[in-house]
Length: 248
Image 1: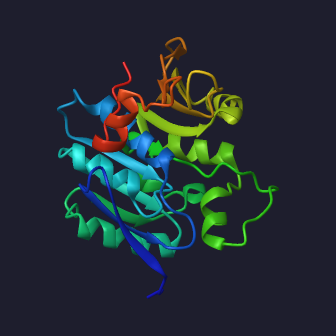
Image 2: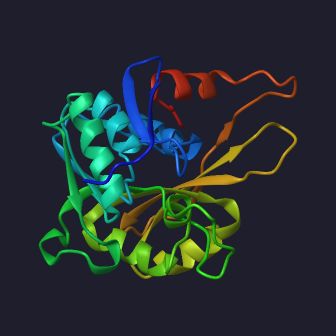
């Protein structure tokens, strides 16, 4: 067993307890926002669905989804053994062992048995390219550096059933790269921009796509985190406190 210096924190008003590394990659806004968006997407769904959380790290997204969706079967897919060890702790600690299965798979060499397997795939992928400056902390570096973004997207689509839904969060400045990489595999894109406030450009995008989708691309209203007086918006508060983002 790997021994790491860890902390235990709570999110969503104490509804979820997360163990994570004290020094290294720690969950942030992107993970919580993506999970809240997917919770909003699933809010009216009553079916039993299967979902893969690709590059799940210590399990933040999976935990938030399990909290709000009792009928969802989640596979947390991660290939870093240290992250997997902590994720398993978090699943047990939050009593989601019936909802979340933590699996050690590499998205670049995915198990063939999982092809066309999931109704939904979510991912908060590493976004720094392989040539960017490395971090001195290997856990930050492995969580933020992606070897091949196009192949990561291909792996996510590979997991989806036909007409299954892909939901990812990414920096706005690489949206074009992701759309090009997906255009032959998915469509019916819905783009949800996130702005810091009313005066600044969007730094993050949430992208919904359908495997085999052919509907026109749609630009959704988006989310402003703060108003022009620096007050947190109601949607942003609901996101951080309740883990729900109503995006329509």
